[in-house]
Image (cartoon, rainbow, N blue to C red):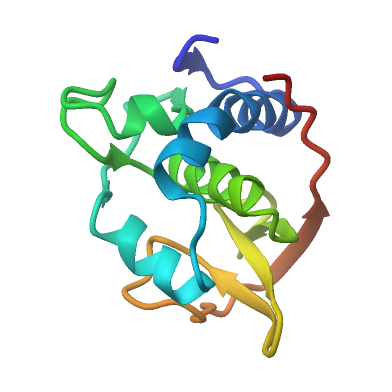
Length: 155
């Protein structure tokens, strides 16, 4: 799947995101499975990513392996935005067999941010937003929608 696509609508973006997650699972099994906790995974991933905006009027959704390549589609290792980070985290949750969901949030008519929530054994559902400095933080948004995830993975 192409990493750069002209932004058309939310539905197409979510379909592309789901495909990128499926295409990332094998990479995450090799590199990020066997984690003890969501906190441990958060800090490991946080050390590998940095936020870069998409080019104007373009939606960039990268697989985990592209995001974490030496020269990814945005120009440097770990460079991506919230949807790229959501792909990475989702594939890592799949690799660790952890229940998770995706959150779309915003303060206007349209969603402006996307991130995960993950189910932790003792804590319940925890926000997992790699744009934040630590796990468990959830910024305030006027609108919030949580989407269940159904990834079809073929190895």
